[in-house]
Image (spheres, helix red, strand yellow):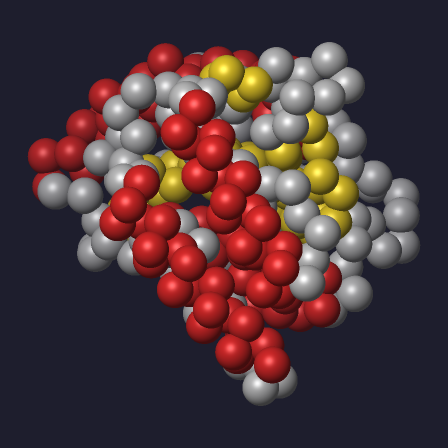
Length: 246
């Protein structure tokens, strides 16, 4: 049984993941106990075929890499993550990491290695882009400022003391996730927020782990459009939570 099921959600990412995925598989092989699954989130047929070919070429060298999961339609980042977690095959931990390599494979390994295997009630570990403890964060100023505004919105509206809810690397105890899965409705970029609040409400502790992070070109997030959507989702999460979920 593998201890961690690590999902890499992808939507039109075959051009960017090629440099990151081999490094990730090498680090996960060295760490041990990790399955890596790429979830192709309903891209065009040509893109899906390119992703499938890329993954299959790597699988001969990396047994930890599972066949790519092809979703018939675009579900959103959260939908892709949850679709992959549904294939976890009894893993004790569920994780995801963004495909662009902003969080390096070495940092993924460092965070996964922090999981507390012996604890009766293990904590979830959320990567955080905060310049402390010697960590390096290279990020466009406008994205940093928007991120701080969004984090403040999340903290104030949902009453949770979080610095960075949106960093694309998270590790969750499987047992804690299974308790809250029925109430998770947000499938877009704000799914991290709903996941975080649902975990906290269920009694699962979350530790934010500072990581090294570097902005990569070609991101899918559009600042104005997606910021509005994410703010709307936070309002809806707040309303559903106040009503007792789901």
